[in-house]
Amino acid sequence: MGKVLIKNGRVVTAVDDYVADVLLDDGKIEAIARTLDVDDAELHDASGLLLMPGGIDAHVHMETPMGGGIETCDTFETGTVSAAFGGTTTIIDFAQQFKGEGPKQALDRRLAAAEPQCCVDYAFHVILTDVSASALAELPDLVNTEGVSSFKLYMAYPDVLMVDDADIYRTMRKVGAHGGMVNLHAENGVVIQALIEEALAAGNVSPKYHQLTRPQLMEGEAAHRVIRIAELAEVPVYIVHLSAKESLEAVVEARDRGIHAFAETCPHYLFLDDTKYDQPGFESAKFVMTPPLRDLECQGALWRGLRFDDLQLVATDHCPFCFNEKAHGILKSKQPGKDDFSKIPNGAPGVEFRLPLLFDGGVKSGRINLNRFVQLTSTAPAKMFGLFPQKGTIAVGSDADIVLFDPEKRHVLSADTHHSNVDYSLFEGREVQGKVSKVFLRGQLIVDGDAWRGRAGMGRYYKRAASGRIM
Ligand code: URP
Ligand code: ZN
Image (cartoon, rainbow, N blue to C red; front, side, top):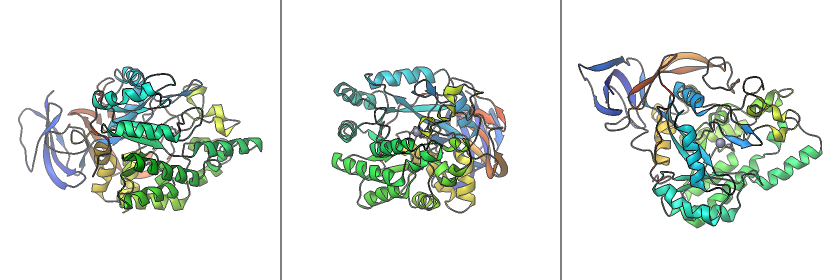
């Protein structure tokens, strides 16, 4: 692989901000200096551009089966092209254990699907749905040998994905002893199921009932409960897609007592609110993700959480289903829930828009500074999930995953121009300031303005070190 010299970029990391030349060689950052001159290097002028570490999206669901033949509509290839155009050079997806299956088998299945397709680097969290003695016995090897140091458990979706509190405790004890961490989908699944049954019995079938049957209180209850379980197990704990002020309060309270409780939120909770469910007809099915969008008070609380590090990172939970059946078939669309909100596939797209949204609505609007922006989108996920310092920063010896970002360029977010398979955007028509200009993956140019220069299969699987050991 040839040398690449990027001249005059404004290097921004979680702590630094200075103008320099950066030399990439053999996939790594070779040198950073005020001025570098190298005869045989490919030159890129980054004057006026931010030079930042590639984004790391710690929560995505590419070509993910959801039961009953339903599957997310991005393949590993289309989803990672979309990620790259959004400045994300590493994704952490999920390997879900089917009931009766061993977790290693689940990981191997996902590795086989991802390997020929991924266009950016990737890793997996393993989802456990069947916490049997034999599954538990496999976990130390997954952490120590396979590089999977985070395990997702669901407190929601009874009879499908949900595990009980004892299994959460057992998993925490098992993986915690080896440097692993448990990630929780924190919602009280059985109460929510009762609310869903009540709504359906009363004939309430429209998408708005997705929101009405998943109250903030039940997210807060589950977050509080699982943090207490982690406290007992003496391990760190991580809440995925935190959306409600009630669950944030549980995290803040625990952190104030010195408990290692961590959480992510997602752009849709920061920029959209529950009035999206007031649209007529089936339109609001586009916004059926779990947890649902919350009110403006929650939005304010989430921004405060990001500012004061009660929330540690922003991930997308990219879980795309087309709105219409036409593009990729009914099973990759929202249409199975046309007459019953409880059958709408849960999830929404977003992997391409995380950086521009957070830059525009976070940095430009004065809610967070530029270093915090890099921290939330790259450095914190790398540290949280055992990828740092190989990834997540601009430093000599780190992977040359680099985003050149134009902080002035305005553009409109739209499904007409994004690169995902999905046929709509949560942010359709929103104008933002700040656009990805070029992206390098381990020193190779993969995005050059609007042109794609990468290829399927060039992404590498990363074995991760310990998760959640951020002190
Ligand atoms: O609605 C969502 N978030 N779907 C994906 C599965 C999950 O809960 O993360
Ligand atoms: Zn998810």
